[in-house]
Image: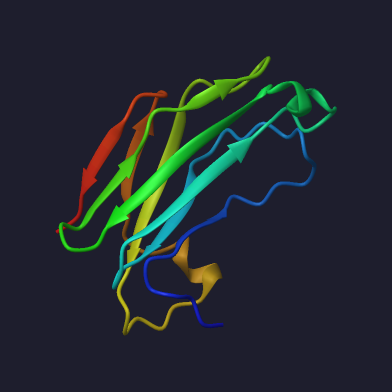
Length: 123
């Protein structure tokens, strides 16, 4: 599969149902070579409360020149949302030929996110 430079791709963990609570790190692959952005969306997964604004969005921005990933402040909330997340951040270089399944096993940076902006420097 071809993945465009600058892509930010959540690749795990796998979940079995929509309201499953994740107790492990969320693996995020960042494909260097261009700037990119992504928003992680979450809601209760059981109902239509998202139509009333009960959801969260966490914006991610990759600055390729400076090799920094900014995880911006969380927007929104919902009942029983997880206030803390562990992100397992994997930087994938353009010439790397790595499968999505293998990304979970490569070197990474761990980031503990509590809803406030984080800036993570690579290299």
